[in-house]
Length: 140
Length: 403
Image (cartoon, each protein chain N blue to C red):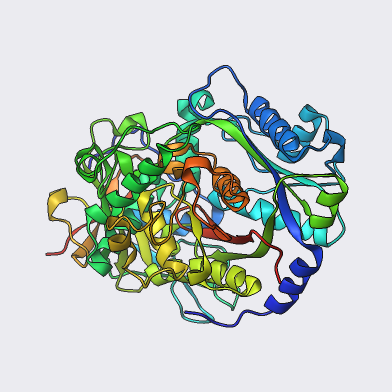
């Protein structure tokens, strides 16, 4: 997971309201947005709570980093040429202990061993100097 | 799952009073056709539908188009009006992915019922197979998912559907054979349609042993990409008579939409998808005053095999999890319990959203579907799905006026 200046895969295009999330990732911390009005977590990050409160009063809470695989797909074809040597790789939708879903990759695991309901924990992949992607691996 | 939906009675009165009909249909050749542009296909399909109705181009006073994956336009409907030489009184571009074609019919009905137009041309055409660049394809895959929180993980479009499929298999103990049976049924139907791309016989074993794209989906679980156009003309029974249209008319009995999520990240569970499909279907069914058992032929959005099972179950044709065995027993085939996509669908005929689903539903109700004709077809349902089983639209069509 060393710095890789020739990373050619798609990178997230940050928005003002998502910056705290990516800044935390860079520091290898997973934070999740929560409406201070309702106390409810939501994901992906938005400038305004998607709940009925429509609140801009949002706090970033350090997440447990624990999740369960809700569903997954072993990809044998990637979306761009940069994925040429990656398949098979696992794209998964995981449910965090805070109750939100995140799209991610399951790493440090044979794709054949991934199961729905499997316990996973966050790891950080510094894909470029600027961008760190949170991914998940089987929990110890 | 049936719940009472507000304003269904009012909607029913509007459709009963106006007697909205599909009076003309047209479809161009479908396949790999590199010598025609997107607007060429739109024009040809429009011409065919106008000729099928036997009306003059100048009789058309409303236009609904969709979008192009190849020719990006700021205002698609008016760009096409300019190209084709129309001066519509009402115009709109519907851009809700695979839910578009079905909703064109609904939007045309609303425009007519509110006095905006009398004869609405609904048309879609694109040279997706020949015209899309590799960067255009990447842009499309990126737009199908969340660019910031999903795409960087290498999620593909088949991959998104595979995520739904994997969870479906898990929740209901369904199998790969159940998905494969949908692809096999579509192929059998396409074999009966002249204007279909893939007609060679396909077996469940072939589907299952073909190249895996995004596990659990293989190549044959995924729809085809094609060039071509299709159109239909929406008007009222009275206007059709006034214009001397001779085609048997397909009457609009009900319509509805249902929304689940845009991004899979926002999905709680499969019930969220089922509820969106059901809301869409229930509004259409309740407006029509019928239920799933009254449908003679169904057209379900089949961009991937999994969507057919989710829609079949969500619309209430069978309980959740029972769509797979129904397909595997061949009960979606012509001549069986409930024929689905008699034209071969997106999986085997051609991919132009649900345009061909609407066209074929109309042909079935006319009794003009040739070797694919469902005996005594009186009620047809068409369901579209845009995004990754995200946005849903349903129409119910009848051979007779709504009574």
